[in-house]
Length: 269
Image (cartoon, rainbow, N blue to C red; front, side):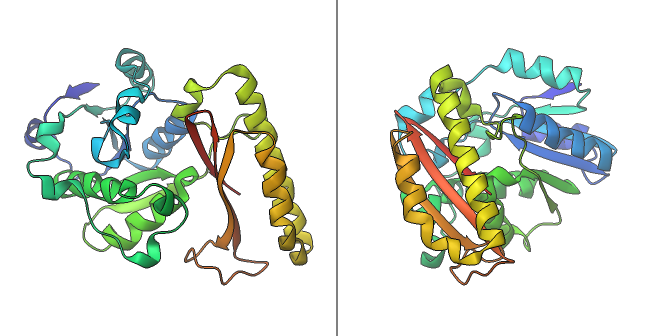
């Protein structure tokens, strides 16, 4: 495993145009990340993992500072997985200008997380654009827990770069809670409540799939979840193909964002 702290050095030393898979992360690695890396290793000759906590996608500087970081533990995980290359760039190197930090999105896309976290996806698109411009990997692997993020990356960046985006299934604990770096900030009690919320939404999804008229129960489900967590930011049903509200039995997906204290969790079923 070779560790690079500079994008330029990586470009000089590695033939990225070969069959290289790229897994961008913000560190604090969990089984969801591991699954993405394993997908890359199966499909590609070499695998590159980046660890970069991107400041431009945080709405508050306090959230950026509080984001869980454990570089030594991450590197041990990556070494055990036999990852070929690890990139740990500085903020200064990633963003040469402030203009690079954000890419504007259309008003029609300011829904779900984008509505409640203004500037977040603009920051995500900014950093992914910089990476794809410099790291011309054959494939990039992303997790479906961040479904809206993948949708926007494909929409705004998919045709601009040679890298093909591979979306991978959400990895969950056996009790349905999705793996997230933010789970590290939760108490055991809140983890249990998060599991309960996942089970409620999973059951709701099943009910709708059997009887589409059940979508009318969404407010009842939202009230039920609100009694378990600190607050529900949104609970919406949208078309999984375009994120619009033209839904039917075959294309619907349930999206949720909720809080335990100051910790925000998202999921989709």
